[in-house]
Length: 393
Ligand SMILES: NC(=O)c1ccc[n+]([C@@H]2O[C@H](COP(=O)([O-])OP(=O)(O)OC[C@H]3O[C@@H](n4cnc5c(N)ncnc54)[C@H](O)[C@@H]3O)[C@@H](O)[C@H]2O)c1
Ligand SMILES: [Zn+2]
Image 1: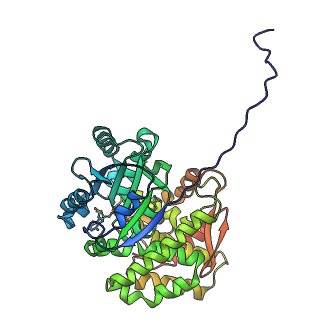
Image 2: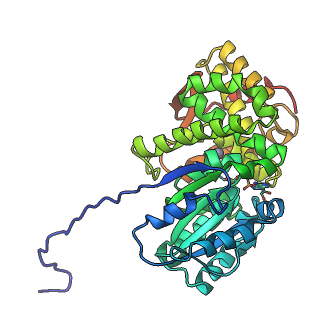
Image 3: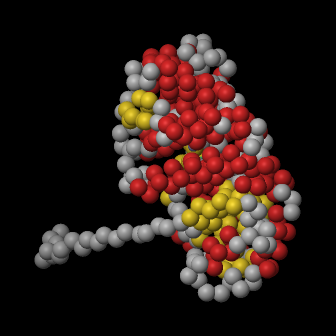
């Protein structure tokens, strides 16, 4: 038999599924000694003996909550049969900078290695969406994936980014270029963290709630409108309800819509996001993700109207709702130098958005409040018209 002839060996096929099961719990005072939430998550993980724990904390959180490290130490010391704290909690710079500089991933990996965190041990990430994305990425690639518990500390991380299954860092100056789909063991939302947020971070996460309400839940949009004053006055119970409803939608989408790891081209939860991601990058991330999403939503709402899908009344209602919550409706970086339409780089963001997903361009628009429709192309002139219809920044 010659080297190019093959034996008639049959192809071997296999197919398997992996079940994911995780909880998003809501509490206050997660590391107070009498709070069982954290302990119970670990106690019921099927592992025997003390679980090794490495904590990584956003510096914005550690400076606003100076007793957190000591609280964590005392909590672990009170339950030595289950919890084994490895080293001191590691403080890392919070905000988008931690996703822009790969050395932070290396730092997390180094601590994982030094503290002997294996696949039965835990990385616990405490912080905003950026830290959770970056630490989650490091945890997913160390030993091909160590256990992760997320403790989100911003509104946006508690209602959206932290409850999902993705992690990432920015690379080649592209947002979320590196990342994996890797669900956490649990997401533990402690509302007490929200009290120390800057006003802009308290508000930014509301954009994701508006997003989910507009594409799938008209009653929730009514609710947000009715609670605008309470939200603007930083009423914590109102915010806890908003976060719970939004997280519920997010989880339901992941669990029931058949594409948790986004293999297809459709991404309804990215309504308003194509322009937002580009705007974040063009402003060097001085515009927060949620702030950019609010502007992206307003642009796509105007486009939904000018492309004949959404009524003028619905458009005006949505834009007025977004404004009353204190969001800026547009930003100078969205405009071309002559101010006559969309900046070229924002338009190019549409193709970058497609490339990130792969497959056919799929953009969510609205045909009414609470109902999204997908389209596969956008018209540049209509986009210019939509932008120019908005109040100038
Ligand atoms: N993985 C996903 O599916 C997903 C989804 C949406 C957004 N994201 C990502 O989330 C990130 C945005 O997250 P974010 O809006 O939480 O902002 P962020 O993580 O950038 O945090 C904003 C600021 O708040 C500080 N901070 C955090 N918690 C605090 C607290 N309790 N008190 C005081 N200060 C605190 C941080 O130090 C930071 O300076 C972006 O990188 C975005 O791409 C990821
Ligand atoms: Zn988002």
